[in-house]
Amino acid sequence: MRELLQTTFAYDRWATDRLLDATAGLDPEQWAAPQPKGLRSLRDTLIHQIHGQRRYLAWWDGSLEPLAAYRLPIDPNDFPDPAALRAYWTGVAADTAAFVADLTDEGARRSLTFPLPDGRSFQIPLWQLMLHVANHSTQHRAEAAQMLTTFGRSPGDLDMLFFYFERAEGA
Image (cartoon, rainbow, N blue to C red; front, top):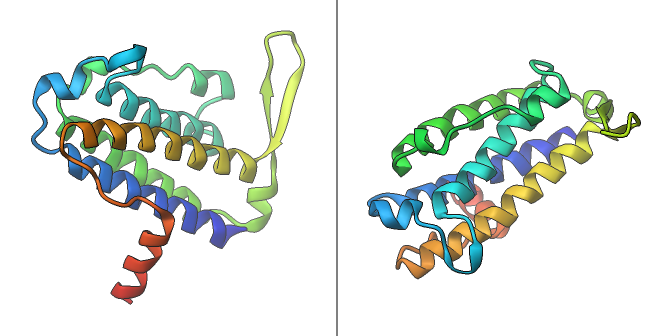
């Protein structure tokens, strides 16, 4: 379990880094303008992906209660350009890597509880939430990659297999 989660979040960092690399040099309109058909801007899509991970991590590591983590605020205006979001991502990625490095199989199987509005609570193993976050990131990276491609800045192949290829070549 631990190795799977470490690999999953190493891939998450690799793919998000590639995506952020492709944002370098975007003009402000490409960065922050809403997309057609009511889609978020590139900036807001990436903030949603990255800050979502920050929120979950704050719950997983116990630094915030679940509702406080869910409500952890962020102001899109704090990210006027890709470099500002890259700086935020660097911290999120480092904190995630540290959390995953310390995770044991037993810890990954621990149950987390989230209160629901009707007074009931939802319980789920940590590993399932972690895979949810990784999958959530994949969805929003795909959306962002499409936007970047329309701007002539494709991030290239983001498939996990290419992550494995790069790791094998570097070994």
